[in-house]
Length: 507
Figure (cartoon, rainbow, N blue to C red):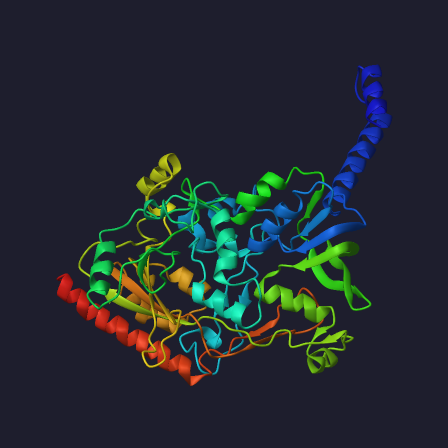
Protein backbone atom coordinates (compact mmCIF):
# COMPACT_ATOMS: atom_id res chain seq x y z
CA UNK A 1 0.00 0.00 0.00
CA UNK A 2 2.81 2.42 0.90
CA UNK A 3 4.71 1.54 -2.31
CA UNK A 4 1.58 1.96 -4.44
CA UNK A 5 0.78 5.32 -2.85
CA UNK A 6 4.36 6.49 -3.32
CA UNK A 7 4.26 5.55 -6.99
CA UNK A 8 1.04 7.46 -7.59
CA UNK A 9 2.44 10.60 -6.00
CA UNK A 10 5.55 10.47 -8.19
CA UNK A 11 3.48 10.02 -11.35
CA UNK A 12 1.00 12.84 -10.80
CA UNK A 13 2.89 16.11 -10.55
CA UNK A 14 -0.16 18.32 -11.00
CA UNK A 15 -3.33 18.62 -8.91
CA UNK A 16 -4.34 15.40 -7.13
CA UNK A 17 -6.91 13.34 -8.99
CA UNK A 18 -10.01 11.75 -7.49
CA UNK A 19 -8.24 8.36 -7.77
CA UNK A 20 -5.32 9.63 -5.71
CA UNK A 21 -7.62 11.04 -3.05
CA UNK A 22 -9.47 7.72 -2.77
CA UNK A 23 -6.19 5.79 -2.42
CA UNK A 24 -4.98 8.29 0.18
CA UNK A 25 -8.22 7.99 2.17
CA UNK A 26 -8.11 4.18 2.06
CA UNK A 27 -4.50 4.24 3.25
CA UNK A 28 -5.38 6.54 6.12
CA UNK A 29 -8.33 4.32 7.07
CA UNK A 30 -6.16 1.17 6.99
CA UNK A 31 -3.50 2.79 9.21
CA UNK A 32 -6.21 3.90 11.66
CA UNK A 33 -7.68 0.37 11.78
CA UNK A 34 -4.26 -1.19 12.34
CA UNK A 35 -3.47 1.28 15.12
CA UNK A 36 -6.83 0.60 16.77
CA UNK A 37 -6.28 -3.17 16.59
CA UNK A 38 -2.81 -2.74 18.09
CA UNK A 39 -4.24 -0.72 20.97
CA UNK A 40 -7.06 -3.22 21.61
CA UNK A 41 -4.83 -6.32 21.76
CA UNK A 42 -2.30 -7.23 24.44
CA UNK A 43 1.29 -7.48 23.32
CA UNK A 44 2.23 -10.84 21.84
CA UNK A 45 1.66 -13.56 24.42
CA UNK A 46 2.13 -17.31 24.30
CA UNK A 47 -0.63 -19.82 24.95
CA UNK A 48 1.39 -21.34 27.80
CA UNK A 49 4.01 -20.16 30.28
CA UNK A 50 5.98 -21.79 33.05
CA UNK A 51 4.84 -19.14 35.54
CA UNK A 52 1.91 -16.73 35.48
CA UNK A 53 2.03 -13.92 38.05
CA UNK A 54 -1.11 -11.89 38.77
CA UNK A 55 -0.36 -8.37 39.98
CA UNK A 56 2.74 -6.28 39.22
CA UNK A 57 2.86 -4.70 42.67
CA UNK A 58 5.35 -4.90 45.51
CA UNK A 59 5.64 -8.70 45.46
CA UNK A 60 4.74 -9.42 41.82
CA UNK A 61 7.46 -7.15 40.44
CA UNK A 62 10.13 -8.94 42.48
CA UNK A 63 8.81 -12.40 41.57
CA UNK A 64 8.73 -11.61 37.85
CA UNK A 65 12.28 -10.24 37.91
CA UNK A 66 13.72 -13.12 39.95
CA UNK A 67 11.94 -15.96 38.12
CA UNK A 68 12.87 -14.59 34.69
CA UNK A 69 16.56 -14.60 35.65
CA UNK A 70 16.45 -18.19 34.46
CA UNK A 71 16.39 -17.89 30.64
CA UNK A 72 14.96 -21.40 30.31
CA UNK A 73 11.59 -20.45 31.84
CA UNK A 74 8.81 -18.32 30.38
CA UNK A 75 7.11 -15.82 32.70
CA UNK A 76 3.88 -13.86 32.19
CA UNK A 77 3.14 -10.89 34.45
CA UNK A 78 -0.43 -9.54 34.38
CA UNK A 79 -1.37 -6.13 35.81
CA UNK A 80 -4.91 -4.73 36.00
CA UNK A 81 -3.61 -1.16 35.93
CA UNK A 82 -1.50 0.59 33.35
CA UNK A 83 2.22 1.35 33.21
CA UNK A 84 3.69 3.80 35.71
CA UNK A 85 5.67 5.87 33.20
CA UNK A 86 4.73 8.35 30.45
CA UNK A 87 1.28 9.13 31.87
CA UNK A 88 -0.26 12.19 33.59
CA UNK A 89 0.22 10.63 37.05
CA UNK A 90 3.94 9.86 36.57
CA UNK A 91 5.23 13.09 38.22
CA UNK A 92 3.00 12.38 41.23
CA UNK A 93 4.28 8.81 41.45
CA UNK A 94 7.95 9.78 41.35
CA UNK A 95 7.73 12.91 43.55
CA UNK A 96 7.49 11.96 47.25
CA UNK A 97 5.80 15.18 48.35
CA UNK A 98 2.95 14.71 45.86
CA UNK A 99 2.07 11.14 46.87
CA UNK A 100 -1.21 12.12 48.56
CA UNK A 101 -2.52 13.42 45.22
CA UNK A 102 -2.60 9.84 43.91
CA UNK A 103 -5.40 8.79 46.24
CA UNK A 104 -8.72 8.41 44.44
CA UNK A 105 -6.92 8.88 41.10
CA UNK A 106 -6.79 6.57 38.09
CA UNK A 107 -3.92 4.62 39.71
CA UNK A 108 -6.00 3.84 42.83
CA UNK A 109 -8.51 0.97 43.03
CA UNK A 110 -10.75 3.34 45.07
CA UNK A 111 -11.73 0.76 47.67
CA UNK A 112 -13.84 1.75 50.67
CA UNK A 113 -14.68 -0.07 53.85
CA UNK A 114 -18.17 -1.34 54.48
CA UNK A 115 -20.03 1.07 56.85
CA UNK A 116 -18.66 0.39 60.34
CA UNK A 117 -20.73 -0.22 63.43
CA UNK A 118 -18.17 0.67 66.11
CA UNK A 119 -15.81 3.09 64.40
CA UNK A 120 -15.33 5.78 61.70
CA UNK A 121 -17.90 8.16 63.21
CA UNK A 122 -16.03 11.10 61.65
CA UNK A 123 -16.36 9.70 58.12
CA UNK A 124 -19.14 10.02 55.58
CA UNK A 125 -21.44 7.03 55.88
CA UNK A 126 -18.91 5.63 58.41
CA UNK A 127 -16.75 4.45 55.50
CA UNK A 128 -13.01 5.06 55.09
CA UNK A 129 -11.03 5.08 51.85
CA UNK A 130 -8.60 2.19 51.44
CA UNK A 131 -5.98 3.35 48.89
CA UNK A 132 -4.51 0.51 46.84
CA UNK A 133 -2.35 0.91 43.75
CA UNK A 134 -3.77 -0.01 40.35
CA UNK A 135 -0.58 0.47 38.32
CA UNK A 136 2.78 -1.16 37.70
CA UNK A 137 4.38 -0.97 41.15
CA UNK A 138 1.07 -1.52 42.94
CA UNK A 139 0.43 0.17 46.28
CA UNK A 140 4.17 0.82 46.51
CA UNK A 141 3.61 3.37 43.72
CA UNK A 142 1.12 5.43 45.75
CA UNK A 143 2.03 4.89 49.43
CA UNK A 144 4.14 7.02 51.79
CA UNK A 145 7.40 5.18 50.97
CA UNK A 146 8.15 4.27 54.61
CA UNK A 147 10.42 1.25 54.99
CA UNK A 148 9.57 -0.80 58.07
CA UNK A 149 10.17 -4.54 58.51
CA UNK A 150 8.01 -6.76 60.66
CA UNK A 151 8.95 -7.40 64.27
CA UNK A 152 11.37 -10.35 64.70
CA UNK A 153 9.05 -11.77 67.35
CA UNK A 154 6.20 -12.04 64.85
CA UNK A 155 8.26 -14.09 62.40
CA UNK A 156 9.42 -16.38 65.19
CA UNK A 157 5.82 -16.86 66.32
CA UNK A 158 4.82 -17.87 62.79
CA UNK A 159 7.63 -20.42 62.74
CA UNK A 160 6.54 -21.90 66.09
CA UNK A 161 2.93 -22.17 64.94
CA UNK A 162 3.84 -24.25 61.90
CA UNK A 163 5.03 -21.83 59.19
CA UNK A 164 8.36 -23.61 59.00
CA UNK A 165 11.13 -21.51 57.48
CA UNK A 166 9.46 -18.18 58.31
CA UNK A 167 11.34 -17.48 61.56
CA UNK A 168 13.32 -14.25 61.66
CA UNK A 169 16.62 -16.07 61.28
CA UNK A 170 15.27 -17.51 58.03
CA UNK A 171 13.94 -14.28 56.51
CA UNK A 172 16.68 -11.92 57.75
CA UNK A 173 19.17 -12.90 54.98
CA UNK A 174 16.57 -11.96 52.35
CA UNK A 175 15.87 -8.61 54.00
CA UNK A 176 19.61 -7.98 53.99
CA UNK A 177 20.01 -9.07 50.38
CA UNK A 178 17.29 -6.70 49.19
CA UNK A 179 18.56 -3.42 50.63
CA UNK A 180 21.06 -0.71 49.76
CA UNK A 181 21.15 0.97 53.17
CA UNK A 182 22.35 4.57 53.27
CA UNK A 183 21.66 5.03 57.00
CA UNK A 184 24.97 5.77 58.73
CA UNK A 185 23.93 4.16 62.04
CA UNK A 186 23.32 0.86 60.22
CA UNK A 187 26.55 0.78 58.22
CA UNK A 188 27.98 -2.01 60.39
CA UNK A 189 24.74 -3.88 61.03
CA UNK A 190 24.64 -7.55 60.11
CA UNK A 191 20.97 -7.07 59.08
CA UNK A 192 21.78 -4.52 56.37
CA UNK A 193 24.11 -4.04 53.44
CA UNK A 194 24.88 -1.33 50.90
CA UNK A 195 24.63 -3.00 47.51
CA UNK A 196 21.08 -4.35 47.19
CA UNK A 197 18.45 -3.02 44.76
CA UNK A 198 16.21 -1.23 47.32
CA UNK A 199 17.71 1.99 48.66
CA UNK A 200 16.91 2.74 52.32
CA UNK A 201 17.46 6.29 53.53
CA UNK A 202 16.46 8.78 56.21
CA UNK A 203 15.17 12.22 55.30
CA UNK A 204 16.38 15.65 56.34
CA UNK A 205 15.02 16.12 59.88
CA UNK A 206 13.30 19.18 61.29
CA UNK A 207 14.23 20.79 64.61
CA UNK A 208 11.44 18.78 66.21
CA UNK A 209 13.08 15.36 65.78
CA UNK A 210 15.30 15.78 68.84
CA UNK A 211 12.28 16.95 70.81
CA UNK A 212 10.44 13.72 70.04
CA UNK A 213 13.45 11.67 71.12
CA UNK A 214 14.16 13.62 74.30
CA UNK A 215 10.56 13.67 75.47
CA UNK A 216 10.02 9.97 74.78
CA UNK A 217 13.26 8.95 76.45
CA UNK A 218 12.21 10.95 79.52
CA UNK A 219 9.32 8.47 79.81
CA UNK A 220 11.71 5.53 79.93
CA UNK A 221 11.84 4.46 76.27
CA UNK A 222 15.15 3.77 74.56
CA UNK A 223 16.39 5.36 71.35
CA UNK A 224 16.82 2.56 68.80
CA UNK A 225 17.38 2.14 65.06
CA UNK A 226 14.35 1.17 62.99
CA UNK A 227 14.70 -2.28 61.42
CA UNK A 228 17.33 -3.51 63.84
CA UNK A 229 17.18 -6.32 66.39
CA UNK A 230 15.55 -4.20 69.12
CA UNK A 231 12.00 -3.24 68.16
CA UNK A 232 10.65 -1.40 71.21
CA UNK A 233 11.62 2.25 71.57
CA UNK A 234 11.76 5.38 69.42
CA UNK A 235 13.53 5.44 66.06
CA UNK A 236 13.96 7.70 63.07
CA UNK A 237 11.77 6.75 60.10
CA UNK A 238 13.46 5.13 57.10
CA UNK A 239 12.21 5.48 53.53
CA UNK A 240 12.55 3.97 50.06
CA UNK A 241 13.60 7.18 48.32
CA UNK A 242 16.57 7.38 45.96
CA UNK A 243 17.90 10.68 44.68
CA UNK A 244 14.77 12.50 45.86
CA UNK A 245 12.43 10.16 43.97
CA UNK A 246 10.18 7.27 44.99
CA UNK A 247 11.79 3.87 44.63
CA UNK A 248 9.34 1.01 44.08
CA UNK A 249 10.19 -2.65 43.65
CA UNK A 250 9.04 -2.21 40.04
CA UNK A 251 11.77 0.37 39.51
CA UNK A 252 14.38 -1.52 41.54
CA UNK A 253 13.73 -5.03 40.21
CA UNK A 254 11.40 -5.01 37.21
CA UNK A 255 12.98 -2.24 35.13
CA UNK A 256 16.13 -4.25 34.60
CA UNK A 257 14.12 -7.35 33.67
CA UNK A 258 11.77 -5.70 31.16
CA UNK A 259 14.02 -6.35 28.18
CA UNK A 260 14.23 -10.10 28.75
CA UNK A 261 12.84 -12.26 25.96
CA UNK A 262 11.35 -14.74 28.45
CA UNK A 263 9.28 -12.14 30.34
CA UNK A 264 5.98 -10.80 29.02
CA UNK A 265 4.25 -7.96 30.88
CA UNK A 266 0.62 -7.23 30.00
CA UNK A 267 -1.06 -4.18 31.53
CA UNK A 268 -4.79 -3.35 31.69
CA UNK A 269 -5.39 -7.10 32.10
CA UNK A 270 -8.18 -7.76 34.61
CA UNK A 271 -8.00 -11.36 35.84
CA UNK A 272 -11.47 -12.88 36.06
CA UNK A 273 -10.57 -16.33 37.41
CA UNK A 274 -7.95 -19.02 37.87
CA UNK A 275 -8.36 -21.97 35.52
CA UNK A 276 -8.52 -25.16 37.59
CA UNK A 277 -8.43 -28.78 36.42
CA UNK A 278 -8.45 -31.76 38.79
CA UNK A 279 -8.14 -29.39 41.74
CA UNK A 280 -4.96 -27.90 40.35
CA UNK A 281 -4.40 -24.36 39.04
CA UNK A 282 -3.48 -24.70 35.37
CA UNK A 283 -3.89 -21.17 34.03
CA UNK A 284 -5.57 -17.78 34.11
CA UNK A 285 -8.50 -16.12 32.38
CA UNK A 286 -8.21 -12.36 32.00
CA UNK A 287 -10.10 -9.56 30.27
CA UNK A 288 -8.36 -7.09 28.01
CA UNK A 289 -10.35 -4.41 26.20
CA UNK A 290 -13.60 -6.33 26.88
CA UNK A 291 -12.19 -9.49 25.30
CA UNK A 292 -11.53 -12.62 27.35
CA UNK A 293 -8.22 -14.49 27.03
CA UNK A 294 -7.03 -17.76 28.56
CA UNK A 295 -3.38 -18.64 29.17
CA UNK A 296 -2.00 -21.86 30.67
CA UNK A 297 0.78 -22.33 33.23
CA UNK A 298 2.90 -25.48 33.30
CA UNK A 299 4.48 -24.82 36.70
CA UNK A 300 2.65 -22.29 38.88
CA UNK A 301 -0.02 -19.61 38.99
CA UNK A 302 1.01 -16.99 41.54
CA UNK A 303 -1.59 -14.61 42.95
CA UNK A 304 0.03 -11.40 44.18
CA UNK A 305 -2.95 -9.11 43.66
CA UNK A 306 -2.96 -7.78 47.22
CA UNK A 307 -4.93 -8.47 50.37
CA UNK A 308 -8.19 -7.51 48.64
CA UNK A 309 -7.52 -8.51 45.03
CA UNK A 310 -6.23 -12.06 45.64
CA UNK A 311 -9.23 -13.32 47.67
CA UNK A 312 -11.56 -11.70 45.14
CA UNK A 313 -9.95 -13.76 42.34
CA UNK A 314 -10.15 -16.93 44.44
CA UNK A 315 -13.87 -16.35 45.01
CA UNK A 316 -14.46 -15.91 41.28
CA UNK A 317 -12.54 -19.14 40.71
CA UNK A 318 -14.80 -21.16 43.01
CA UNK A 319 -12.51 -21.18 46.03
CA UNK A 320 -14.07 -19.85 49.23
CA UNK A 321 -16.86 -20.44 51.78
CA UNK A 322 -19.45 -22.75 50.25
CA UNK A 323 -22.48 -20.71 51.34
CA UNK A 324 -21.11 -17.44 49.93
CA UNK A 325 -20.25 -19.01 46.57
CA UNK A 326 -23.59 -20.82 46.45
CA UNK A 327 -25.48 -17.55 46.97
CA UNK A 328 -23.64 -16.08 43.97
CA UNK A 329 -24.19 -19.25 41.87
CA UNK A 330 -20.44 -19.84 41.56
CA UNK A 331 -19.57 -23.57 41.29
CA UNK A 332 -17.67 -24.60 44.43
CA UNK A 333 -14.28 -26.16 43.77
CA UNK A 334 -12.90 -25.84 47.30
CA UNK A 335 -14.82 -24.92 50.46
CA UNK A 336 -12.18 -22.82 52.24
CA UNK A 337 -12.36 -19.77 54.60
CA UNK A 338 -11.09 -17.33 51.97
CA UNK A 339 -11.82 -13.72 52.91
CA UNK A 340 -12.19 -14.47 56.61
CA UNK A 341 -9.89 -13.37 59.46
CA UNK A 342 -9.38 -9.91 57.90
CA UNK A 343 -7.18 -7.80 60.16
CA UNK A 344 -6.59 -4.11 59.56
CA UNK A 345 -4.81 -1.46 61.59
CA UNK A 346 -6.96 1.34 62.93
CA UNK A 347 -5.44 4.56 64.21
CA UNK A 348 -6.31 7.78 66.02
CA UNK A 349 -4.73 11.15 65.23
CA UNK A 350 -3.91 13.53 68.09
CA UNK A 351 -3.27 17.12 67.07
CA UNK A 352 -1.04 19.40 69.13
CA UNK A 353 -0.59 23.10 68.34
CA UNK A 354 2.95 24.43 68.88
CA UNK A 355 4.62 27.83 68.72
CA UNK A 356 7.47 26.88 66.39
CA UNK A 357 7.40 26.54 62.63
CA UNK A 358 6.14 23.20 61.28
CA UNK A 359 5.43 21.85 57.81
CA UNK A 360 2.40 23.18 55.98
CA UNK A 361 2.43 20.93 52.91
CA UNK A 362 -0.40 22.63 51.01
CA UNK A 363 0.25 26.33 51.58
CA UNK A 364 4.06 26.16 51.46
CA UNK A 365 4.25 24.70 47.95
CA UNK A 366 5.51 27.91 46.34
CA UNK A 367 7.86 28.53 43.41
CA UNK A 368 10.93 28.28 45.64
CA UNK A 369 9.93 24.79 46.82
CA UNK A 370 9.24 23.67 43.26
CA UNK A 371 12.57 25.00 41.98
CA UNK A 372 14.42 23.42 44.88
CA UNK A 373 13.01 20.03 43.99
CA UNK A 374 13.28 20.44 40.23
CA UNK A 375 16.97 21.42 40.31
CA UNK A 376 18.23 19.68 43.47
CA UNK A 377 15.66 16.96 44.31
CA UNK A 378 15.50 18.39 47.84
CA UNK A 379 13.07 20.26 50.06
CA UNK A 380 9.42 19.73 50.93
CA UNK A 381 8.61 17.91 47.69
CA UNK A 382 11.34 15.35 48.41
CA UNK A 383 9.84 14.59 51.84
CA UNK A 384 6.91 12.46 53.03
CA UNK A 385 4.79 15.15 54.60
CA UNK A 386 6.51 15.57 57.94
CA UNK A 387 6.59 12.00 59.30
CA UNK A 388 9.81 11.83 61.35
CA UNK A 389 9.83 9.13 64.02
CA UNK A 390 8.16 5.94 65.24
CA UNK A 391 7.69 4.85 68.82
CA UNK A 392 7.01 1.14 69.24
CA UNK A 393 5.57 0.28 72.65
CA UNK A 394 4.02 -2.62 74.51
CA UNK A 395 1.08 -1.42 76.59
CA UNK A 396 0.34 -4.76 78.26
CA UNK A 397 2.51 -4.75 81.36
CA UNK A 398 0.81 -7.78 82.97
CA UNK A 399 1.34 -10.03 79.94
CA UNK A 400 4.55 -8.82 78.27
CA UNK A 401 4.76 -9.66 74.58
CA UNK A 402 7.91 -10.30 72.53
CA UNK A 403 6.71 -7.62 70.12
CA UNK A 404 5.03 -4.18 70.48
CA UNK A 405 1.28 -3.72 70.20
CA UNK A 406 1.26 0.03 69.46
CA UNK A 407 2.99 2.31 67.00
CA UNK A 408 3.06 6.07 67.53
CA UNK A 409 4.03 8.16 64.53
CA UNK A 410 5.36 11.66 65.17
CA UNK A 411 4.58 13.99 62.29
CA UNK A 412 5.68 17.62 62.12
CA UNK A 413 2.52 18.77 60.37
CA UNK A 414 -1.26 18.66 60.81
CA UNK A 415 -4.08 17.64 58.46
CA UNK A 416 -5.84 21.03 58.76
CA UNK A 417 -3.80 22.44 55.86
CA UNK A 418 -5.14 20.06 53.20
CA UNK A 419 -8.93 19.82 53.22
CA UNK A 420 -9.03 18.22 49.78
CA UNK A 421 -7.02 15.27 51.05
CA UNK A 422 -9.44 14.92 53.98
CA UNK A 423 -12.31 14.74 51.50
CA UNK A 424 -10.49 12.07 49.49
CA UNK A 425 -10.11 10.11 52.74
CA UNK A 426 -13.92 10.42 53.03
CA UNK A 427 -13.89 12.56 56.17
CA UNK A 428 -17.24 14.09 57.13
CA UNK A 429 -17.71 17.53 55.58
CA UNK A 430 -19.00 19.13 58.77
CA UNK A 431 -15.96 17.80 60.62
CA UNK A 432 -13.67 19.29 57.99
CA UNK A 433 -15.35 22.69 58.25
CA UNK A 434 -15.30 22.70 62.03
CA UNK A 435 -12.61 20.57 63.71
CA UNK A 436 -10.13 20.58 60.83
CA UNK A 437 -10.45 24.32 60.35
CA UNK A 438 -9.20 25.16 63.84
CA UNK A 439 -5.61 24.63 62.77
CA UNK A 440 -5.77 26.33 59.40
CA UNK A 441 -2.53 28.32 58.92
CA UNK A 442 -1.37 27.31 62.41
CA UNK A 443 1.70 25.33 63.39
CA UNK A 444 1.17 21.91 64.87
CA UNK A 445 2.26 18.29 65.09
CA UNK A 446 0.29 15.04 64.80
CA UNK A 447 0.76 11.96 66.96
CA UNK A 448 -0.87 8.98 65.27
CA UNK A 449 -1.66 6.09 67.61
CA UNK A 450 -1.99 2.84 65.64
CA UNK A 451 -2.92 -0.70 66.63
CA UNK A 452 -0.26 -3.07 65.35
CA UNK A 453 -2.04 -6.33 66.17
CA UNK A 454 -5.80 -5.77 66.33
CA UNK A 455 -7.96 -8.46 67.90
CA UNK A 456 -10.98 -7.48 65.80
CA UNK A 457 -11.61 -9.76 62.85
CA UNK A 458 -13.48 -8.79 59.70
CA UNK A 459 -14.07 -10.33 56.28
CA UNK A 460 -14.06 -9.70 52.55
CA UNK A 461 -16.84 -10.91 50.26
CA UNK A 462 -17.93 -10.51 46.66
CA UNK A 463 -20.63 -8.04 45.68
CA UNK A 464 -21.37 -9.97 42.50
CA UNK A 465 -19.72 -12.24 39.95
CA UNK A 466 -18.65 -9.21 37.88
CA UNK A 467 -14.82 -8.97 38.15
CA UNK A 468 -15.09 -5.20 37.60
CA UNK A 469 -17.17 -4.68 40.73
CA UNK A 470 -15.51 -3.78 44.02
CA UNK A 471 -15.67 -6.39 46.82
CA UNK A 472 -17.30 -5.83 50.21
CA UNK A 473 -14.49 -5.04 52.66
CA UNK A 474 -15.62 -5.11 56.28
CA UNK A 475 -12.71 -4.92 58.77
CA UNK A 476 -15.14 -4.65 61.73
CA UNK A 477 -12.94 -2.07 63.43
CA UNK A 478 -13.10 -2.09 67.26
CA UNK A 479 -15.51 -5.02 67.38
CA UNK A 480 -13.21 -6.56 70.01
CA UNK A 481 -13.11 -4.61 73.28
CA UNK A 482 -9.37 -5.32 73.71
CA UNK A 483 -8.66 -3.05 70.75
CA UNK A 484 -10.53 -0.19 72.42
CA UNK A 485 -8.55 -0.72 75.64
CA UNK A 486 -5.21 -0.76 73.80
CA UNK A 487 -6.04 2.38 71.81
CA UNK A 488 -7.14 4.08 75.03
CA UNK A 489 -3.78 3.29 76.61
CA UNK A 490 -2.05 4.65 73.53
CA UNK A 491 -4.01 7.88 73.62
CA UNK A 492 -3.33 8.29 77.34
CA UNK A 493 0.35 7.77 76.63
CA UNK A 494 0.27 10.44 73.91
CA UNK A 495 -1.38 12.77 76.42
CA UNK A 496 1.34 12.16 78.99
CA UNK A 497 3.92 12.43 76.22
CA UNK A 498 2.55 15.91 75.53
CA UNK A 499 2.99 16.80 79.20
CA UNK A 500 6.54 15.44 79.17
CA UNK A 501 7.29 17.45 76.07
CA UNK A 502 6.11 20.63 77.78
CA UNK A 503 8.59 19.93 80.56
CA UNK A 504 11.47 19.34 78.11
CA UNK A 505 10.60 22.14 75.73
CA UNK A 506 8.65 25.29 76.58
CA UNK A 507 5.82 26.01 74.18
